[in-house]
Amino acid sequence: METGWQFYTRVTEAWDSMLADIASARSFIDLDQYIFEPDRIGRRFLELLIQKAKQGVRVRVICDAAGSANLYNSGFPNLLSEAGIQIFFVNPISPWRIHNFTSWFFRDHKKILVVDGAVGHTGGVGINDRMSDWRDTNVRLTGPIVAEFARVFRKTLEIARRKRLAVIQNNPSLGEFGLLTSSPYLRSLRSFRYRKRYLRDLFVDKVKSAKECIYLTTPYFVPDFRLFSALQQQARSGLDVKLVVPYTSDHLSLDIAAASYFSLALASGIKVYRYRSHILHAKSAVIDDWSTVGSANLDNLSFWFCYEANIYSHNQNFTQELKRQFEADLTESMEVKLVEWKFRPIKQKLLELLTWPAHNFM
Figure 1 (cartoon, rainbow, N blue to C red):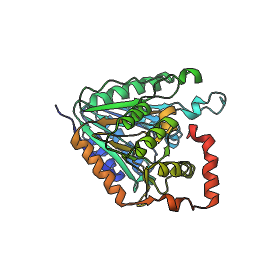
Figure 2 (tube, rainbow, N blue to C red; figure 1 turned 45 degrees about the vertical axis):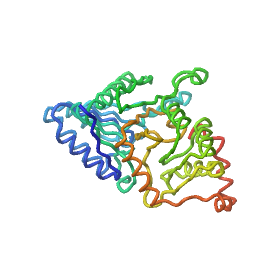
Figure 3 (cartoon, rainbow, N blue to C red; figure 1 turned 60 degrees about the horizontal axis):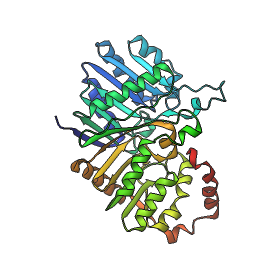
Figure 4 (cartoon, helix red, strand yellow; figure 1 turned 120 degrees about the vertical axis):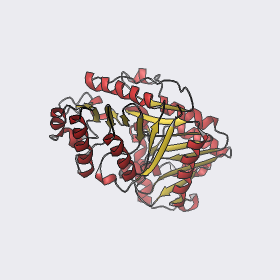
């Protein structure tokens, strides 16, 4: 059976597709979401999940306790439980344990939906009304890859049940598609230095081996030294290296941090574009004939401190679709020119400089 896919570049389209698949469920629904707000769209999801549970469908929901704090603190978890739905929250924040910063910092940032073992969804889309007009990318998949979605969900469920962080191991790709996860640092700073960061390491390897083009789309650009240096080196060698980021995202501090890289990026030949139409929240990359899309941002928070999941592929048609999305975004973006960027206000330059000590935690 071949892998099939459908991309959604608008949040409302992704929601409609997810709701339609949930409504058609006959056996089970597994949903893992970083942001799940009990607002208008959130209530549509919650009401449908309760309805399906009452029809005898097994429903399991995992949410991050920080990203879905309003749901966590609402009465909905009890309502879901009363309907027979299993609901878990990963890593609840513990204000009385200030010394245990893992309860504040390490998050489940994945966005995964599995229906009947036949359909999987992933990408950057959360369940929150304020995201309705954002530019994001989600993908609906069918075929063998859905088993990987289910495996990662089961491992996350085990983590949530045991209330103890653990590494989610990755399976090697058996074909044109694979699902790659990343897990937070778990033990000591010393051991972390030697822990493989699957997503970051894969990005670095792909960037270093690129021969033609590197097209990156991310809402938050705060890469570590190895990844940024690899991008600079490839741009200096003449590769077509382009980066699309929001003109304004939903986090001002991260916008300033991203801007602190622009001068270095532009001087090395990396072309930087700022998307202006809506808030850009898509997380994708096209590197030659390889591509990826998922929950991971190109920042240290995603690569070091969060559970993430990205679909990746060598399929030519899949990669070409993501490339066309990237090219469409360029038409809605303003290119940053080094000559003009140098004359930005002094206040902005100072703010950018002040973010550098915090880059490892952004």
